[in-house]
Length: 344
Image 1 (spheres, rainbow, N blue to C red):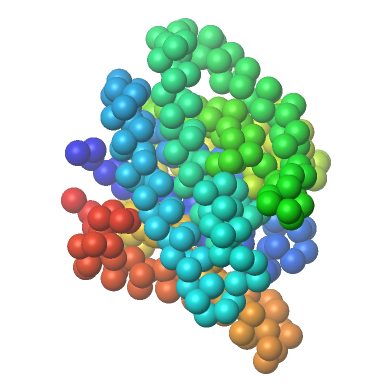
Image 2 (image 1 turned 180 degrees about the vertical axis):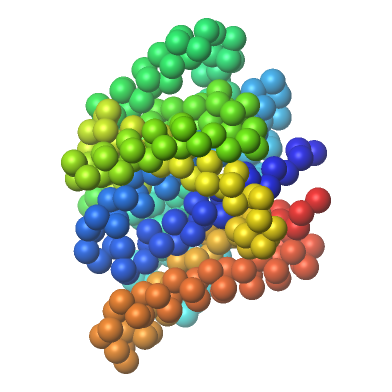
């Protein structure tokens, strides 16, 4: 059993708050500077954090079984239940068969709860990175060769990021437009680069010492990059504007969150709140769309002050997801599906 590190839980807590905020009307409606700032690093941050504790020494079969259990079981269980309920309540705009097809296809633009795309994709990333590390023995290379081994898939992925967007097929007798490959495999090389970066940098990331000068450098890169360019990232929509700038912003933003988390870990009250959110980040990721999206639609019928509606739905999404997490932690069957987030 892996020892939990408070600052890693805090970083996940900050990250999941950014994910919920990124799906909120306040940020999405204008696609302005706040959108570009948040989206430039919040998903790469989660791939970096996911790579920290990944064990490449486990067997391939063990890795597949473990990641299937942790990622695909909650994904399929939740997504299928959502489609069945939508069909039974008459909220389904398409046939149940077509909706289930999109569940097994597993890309964000075709899912009712968009954030679910991360789970099957992370499963794919884990399997790819295990294979990549074990074939090329990346962790045994000199640091400069490790950088090269991270850059190569990143470049290839960036060059092909829109290659599988807007594909047209025929499903039965119906023409359909498909965005992305199954499980978002078309962005696999980009996301895997961040995952492997987290794995290779795990010694520094796990170290709880706050490093002030590197933090300042990262802050200058991040703020300066956003000040001089509109470049940003949205992997779900296959946006990765400029290879060098977008990558620099993603790494610098992730670095800033990790350092800030190390500093926050010194304050027990902050650690308890953000650490709790971090331990329940999977549940918040899965369920926040239900509360945030549906409440926004409901409140929008009564008021057009969308900024305040956005604030209310953001808070409700967090609180509602926490309630779901507490229920899951008390029901054995749901613990089996989603895991138990209670600290060891």
